[in-house]
Amino acid sequence: MTSDKCGVYTITCSTTGKVYVGSSVRIYARWGAHRTCLRKGKSTCIILQHAWSCHGEQNFEFKVVEECKRDDLYGREQYYVATLRPVLNSHTDVRRRYGAAVRAKINARLRARAAFITRCPRGHEYTEANTYRSAKGKRICRACNALRVSGVYAAETPEQREARRARAADYYERNKPTLKAQSL
Image 1 (cartoon, one colour):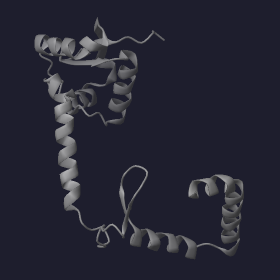
Image 2: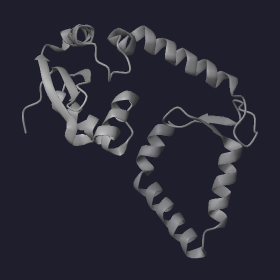
Image 3: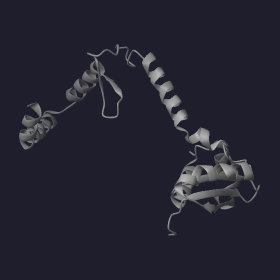
Image 4: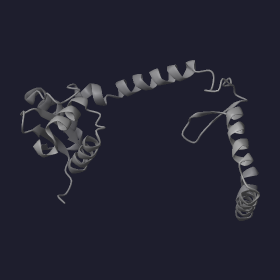
């Protein structure tokens, strides 16, 4: 395969002549990602997805327009968006799509929305005593989790229960020095 490049690319529909302009640090990898999403019908660019579905993959041409340095990438993409006026792009303001201010606004909105959720889906209140966070930061209701775990244990056969207990004992024996050091 061709070595990957950093720069601006176009995806052109040969049937209609409509263009999509994009940029990437790894252009050929990005083109592969575009094709995968478009084939599955799950592209985030709705206009490009519609054109792909209507005209078929064979009618689209991928072309590298300009290679550039990583620091100049978004500026060059904005230049080509303004020059070529692509019809297949959902967003034509590159800064709006990539700006730190926009990401900060989105994160603040998501945090505010999460603050309004005071109960779990089963109706238990999220309190400090009844809630913990998963490794990914998701809130988990202790009451619901206890119900789920007790249901799993109730469905176990005696053989499964003994196997689970044996695995737990084995894990504890293997990690005993580590667990003791952490508790000190």
